[in-house]
Structures are given as structure tokens and as C-alpha cells.
Length: 248
Image 1 (tube, one colour):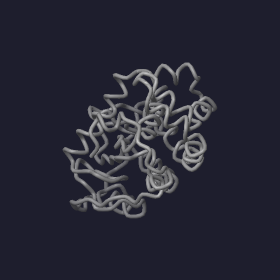
Image 2 (cartoon, rainbow, N blue to C red):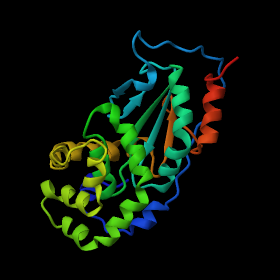
Image 3 (spheres, helix red, strand yellow):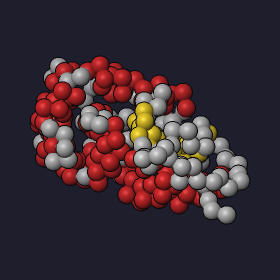
């Protein structure tokens, strides 16, 4: 996995190559379990709108004490992650609504554009992190097209001081306007993109957790802390059902 120092430098790897990169496998099987009854949310709330931040700095949707905890390590410049987002989120929300399954999204940062988007999706309310991530994945081709079109500005951002670097990347990639249209003002974005301490924390967490868990490709999944050897939604759905998230 890239070091924090490497992530904070500007890589000019071809964006389209990043978009098409495949995912990696894993290891570990999850044992079959008995059916787990739905768990009611506290009165006046619902699990589909409940978001907490984990000790690993991931964003958890659903019951934080769910018996089945699904974790995704994802990159915002990973085409396979974008595909998973489009295909899986309706089904994940159905599982989460029962209180039996929670879904946590953690960053595995691959490049400076990824780190810039990771910073921006975390910039507002915690409830918006996953929805903004899904929208950013849906816009991935347009983001890369903007970077290709604004190559000189993108390269210049790499020579800028750290507190200016990610603003330059966001501008070259068309991200300021994109996120402004989704409720993050330009001023909010600029404050987040110049918060180098927070940006370094995102990069550090990514590098340390990837090293600890031996994750070197995205998307990668854990269920109750055990690495799954599957990364397609149809397969993960089956794992959750066998583990107990199913009807009688």
C-alpha cells in the first residue's frame, strides 16, 4: 500500500486506467448461522438514517450494534467500487433497515484524486458521507474527463504547497462545482481541502489499515472482522443470508 508521503504527492497515472482497474480477492469463510430476528430502532428513529463513525474512522450506516457488521474498503477512483455502489446499495439498505446488518464504508486511498474526493465526501454532515460517495462514483467518468482536459492545471497542483494542493486537484477535476450542486458550498469545500491535518489522517488510516489487514485492492470486504473472499454484491448478499440475515 502507498505510504502517506506518496499519497500526498501528485500522481499523473492515467485516470482512465484507474477507472478500469479490477478488484482483489480475499480470504476467510463465514460460517452459516441461525436466522436473526429483526431488531427495532429506538423510538422515533430508523436504522436507514442512523450513521455513526467507527473507531477506524469509517462511516457506519445502520445499527452500530448489529450482529452482522459488513465493512467495505473502497477507493473513489475504482471503477469496480463504482459498479458495486450502483448495484448493491438498494439491497444493502434493505438489510440495514432490519437492524441485523450494518454497513461501514472505509477509505483505501489509491491516488491524490481519490484522497481529494475522500476529503470532500467527509466534509459535511456524517449522514451525507455515503450518499455523496455514491454520487461521486456515479460521476467518475466525468471526473476523469475533466482531469484529462485540464491536465496542465492538474499537474500544477502537484507543485503547489500542501495547503493549496488539494484545492487545485479539486478545481482541475471539476469537483468544486459538482459538490456545490449537492449542498457543499465552495467555502465549506475550501476549508476541508486546506485542512492538511485531517487529510493526512485519512491517508494515514488508509495506509495503516491496509497494511494491517493485507488489503491491496478494492473493493474489499470484511464481515464481523473476517475478510471475505468475494467482492460482488450477489455473492455478498448470499453470505449475509447464510450468516443469519434472512427470513424463516
